Length: 394
Length: 135
Image (cartoon, rainbow over all chains, first blue to last red; front, side, top):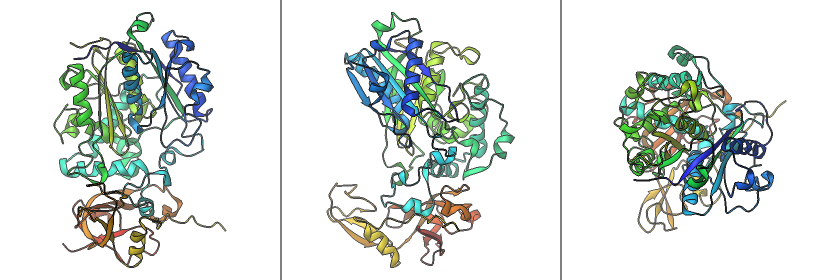
């Protein structure tokens, strides 16, 4: 069982917005500055930088040039992590491993995305047109058929899950309603007015069975997280958040191969691995912060993490279990669906806030075992973190 | 007068030219690895044995719906007047799954519905269209 010798010591979030902003690299520096202030660090103390951005980003401004724009010198670690929706979790994993091995001592993980700066609508921003890989292998076939982007790809999997296990749109509604209930007291959340099941069903279809309210809220924004050695963490004011469990799972070729493609995701590999590293089981998890680009992803992730049996995710979420007062508080800031969609930085940021005990009105107690997920591609990549204010859950 | 945006077309460049050329001659062509015999589509290296020589073989162009979804938004101007329309994947009798458009009444769409390629496809279709068949 793992005892962490590094910790998350800083968190910075620019205000998520649908308005036009400066380019992504500038927002990344803004989030970095906020994280430094949060941590009580000077930028000269940062000796490692990891950079992430959406692979569909129309703003090419953010890359390794972040170092030059932020005016950083003498870095001992510098890389760009490109792992789709698992990038956020993977940056924290890499930073943790690097610091604990002595490669660096104080690593900033920065992510920024400005999908709405090109004047596109939210839906257009991630439809990506010809930039989507040819999953069939024949370039242009999906687009020629009229299939564009991630919404349809996830809807394909959801349809099979509904057909095979009886999952319903009502189960999707339960996820959306729970996210919105948690968003009510998160002043960074874009949507805070209460959502009823009736209002969910009144929302128009985007790609059936998904409605507008099944889909995440793209924003322009940035999040930065700083990972430091335990020695440095002990000198800083904030409550350290330890990464006590890590895992990844990438099953491969989900849309077009396998017995039950997508209906069991990489979460079935990543989750148990992270729990085992932390010395816990699903029963010990107190708070879930799950990558919910679509309501359906929450359902299938909970199944694959072992909170319930495969196929029972719909019933598991249907009774209000995920919302305030429920048995498994999930997406306690509103998730990607009601707060803001920054590709996995959203659940990571909220997980840090909860683990610190600084979530105020939406604080869940106890908060010793917080699981954070990342889902990438078309349910092809998955990464898991277990966060805790304890360095070990032994 | 504005020129309507043309629908995306299946890429007919190498190394998969035989696929698009096959469609023009009412043939759904698949790749068979010359080393291990695995039938697949859209691969530049064999998914089983990593070899790089394929023969193009003609499929029966029949299969079952593996999954589907109904598009209600115009993600591309060429499809604006077709919404709502259905796309999905078909599992062909030979094994591979393939991206599909469906010219089927929306209420009849179902997983495992038997389908075949519609060679008489809608005139504005640029993709691979399947229709229902008797099992």
